Length: 216
Ligand SMILES: C[S@@+](CC[C@H](N)C(=O)[O-])C[C@H]1O[C@@H](n2cnc3c(N)ncnc32)[C@H](O)[C@@H]1O
Image (cartoon, rainbow, N blue to C red; front, side, top):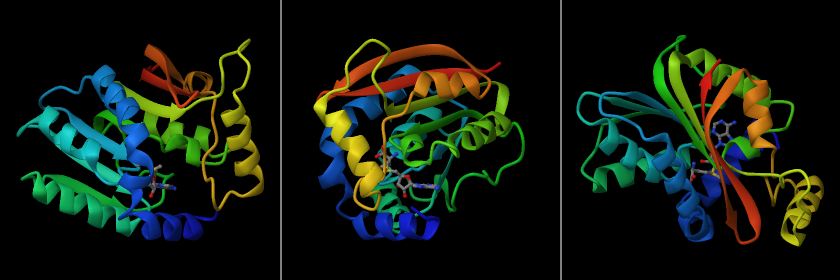
């Protein structure tokens, strides 16, 4: 989908997103954050912050001395996130941009952690390396990247019917199914990261991969 179509799609569903997707995804998203283990005082960037659940958790993890920034293509998602942050008692604690990534509009080595959940798999396969290269650029040399995404099956395992359906739908109806399972561990390593932690869990028979990685 074009940037404009993506923006319109997420603007349209922003107020219903949690009802549509969060029931299943929240377990994996929270597991990803637990593995990343963000520390007090860190500077964190979330790409594709969506309805802002992780932003609240990240603000609590970094504390008063840390900072949380976010970038998302959808102004509708920004509005939902801002409402959530206000309700949680954290108005103005996150620097939320509405922009399409890549590129990431931040100087080199700005962040201790960059986090994404259910976002990297939305990008075309030939754009993912550029986005991961941007993540490496904005991370400090000792920083950590934490990604949770729908994943292709590990070699040797058979694709589930659901995964085949997702790929077919994404190929033929990308405006309805905008994501596709990706070989997350390979993509992250090929972009110049070393894996510090990796885990796989099942979401309704679909594999979800979680990685924590560091620039090589
Ligand atoms: C599937 S949602 C996931 C939201 C959130 N991370 C979660 O786990 O609930 C993907 C998010 O990525 C955003 N997004 C999609 N394409 C983008 C792009 N090119 N640049 C920035 N954000 C994008 C969407 O607006 C949406 O909020």
